Amino acid sequence: MDITETPGLLAGKVAFISGAGRGIGAAAARLFAREGARVLLAARTEPQLKTVTEEIRAAGGTADYVVCDLADAASVRAAVDRTGEVYGRLDLAFNNGATIQTPGPMDLLPETEFDRVFTVNLKGVWLAMAAEVALIRATAGTGAIVNTSSVGSFGGNPELPAYGAMKRAVNSLTESAAVTYGPEGIRVNAISPGNTLTEMIRAWEAEAPGLQQRLVARTPLGRGAEPHEIAEAAAWLLSDRASYVTGAVLRVDGGVGV
Image (cartoon, rainbow, N blue to C red; front, side, top):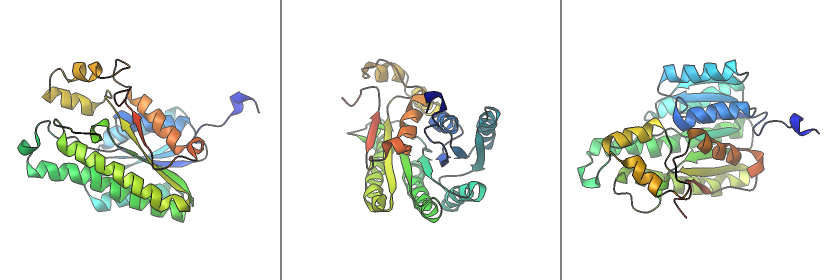
């Protein structure tokens, strides 16, 4: 077959993407659709979701969206189930939605903020994976899930201690799910982005002037990542080209972890 006729990386698949209104999630939604997937976008912000969905449709892709609050269990389950209602199946899931904490030492973090970070960044991922496994089982039969972790999940994280702790727990959930569901043909991996030029990192920098310079100085590639570069790693892990990869936490960090 001529290479120009090669189908997209995710051709024929249905993908659920959380945190899809902006940043890495929006980049992933656009990329997955270009690679042939039908996508269901989820986030709290309907105007952003609508904008990204319309962009994908205008480019010839297939997309729909659902408003979802990752801090609400019923909302998470309903969002995942909506994928089955719209497309009749679920093959792939990218659990990317997250929230950041106010930067600073752990003893100064209010308990209410710790609880919020836990609920969104860890419990929300657990709830989503449980719903996704159930829907994959009931429809596609086999599939793949990718969770977004962070380089902040490795080692100590004095500036974002709660955020780092929840992301490290996401790594553990990912590995446990890979072992649990691998025999059923459901692969589960995570990506661990480094400094990525998103609204979240800009919010952090507003609280910590000079952050970008410090992060870039620690990065062998000498720059922050664009959101689409992180999305590319997720797309590969979700694709059949990564068919023998499960339980991995893939660093996408410009060499920070070397």
